[in-house]
Image (cartoon, rainbow over all chains, first blue to last red; front, side):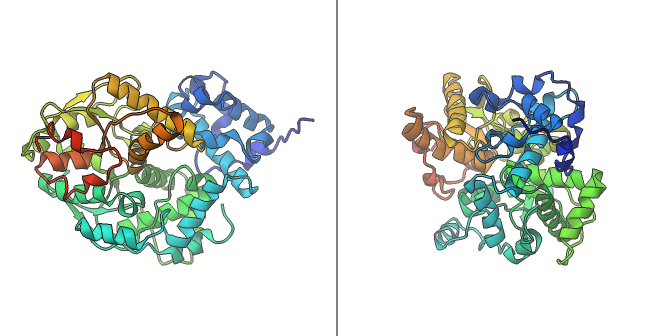
Length: 156
Length: 291
């Protein structure tokens, strides 16, 4: 049976403007130019906003959710006449999925890399040598210890 | 517009595509832009996956980078749309959303940083646009005459336009003017502001988006493409190798960061610029590049 969670909307992060979704009047301007919607029929920003608004969004934060196909192109942000910013609703949904342990492995591992190296790519001797050949200064030190202090307390 | 900036290095350029950094360091001083080092930066952090794991910590890490940049006493210059997106948006949020700012500050409480909101984040494309095509053209020693260039802006340079403040979000032309300043011809193609597809978690679906763009560029007669982001660069350079493997579609359209084209036009040697590292070979263009 479909589970309705009337309080769901309030659990979306308000760091961006995901909280503005109540203004959505379902016009589909966001769908018209969405490149992900063109490739994944189940990726429909209008429906994603509606499901979040009504509190029937559990399927969107589950493992394997289609929300991870968002191109983050911000076409929907620009085209929305109501300032709903579907891309920001989707990011807030991604946060909930991650906190529930449902983010794709490659996504979680990028976050781990930032904590471990301070950068998403680990420094290597190969790249140090190539930088030297290209006449570049030594790799700057990215203080991973600071990342552990900020991110090491169990996510968002 | 000219003057000294602190280089915010990011991850992909210094750690995977250092040849883009070489090009930037060679071409920018010739148009009056000084790049200074400053220690202590980390990943911006990356604005679609790392941001997707936690907006609060994304903002806190970005705030720390902004604070480090502020300490340098100069504005920040980035060579990457991802860094531009994160740092620019974070700076905007910190100025308009006091609750989010307070939460980010709390996450930084164990570190010795303070952010006062006094640093501006500039994309190299925007700084070059401010200098203007005329002055850039004056630095050109080997015009790229006859070279047809398809410009790929990359989403995060353009949108959201109210925060990125670079150009029109759907009909941009500034980067094309910068390409024309090098003596080359910027060619318009269908879907020229479309996304490269890099952020889709389904890699093949993302590649199909890039493939569509490359096809449109070729149909418009482009010899190569110019962009201003290492993530877009990877999607088009390594991406064309992957298109062949996974989509059975073959293309050979060399991709350049704008700084690489500028450096070439200023007379830099392609070997010194590390262009042989590109997966899609640049050599077939040498004649057109006047080499």
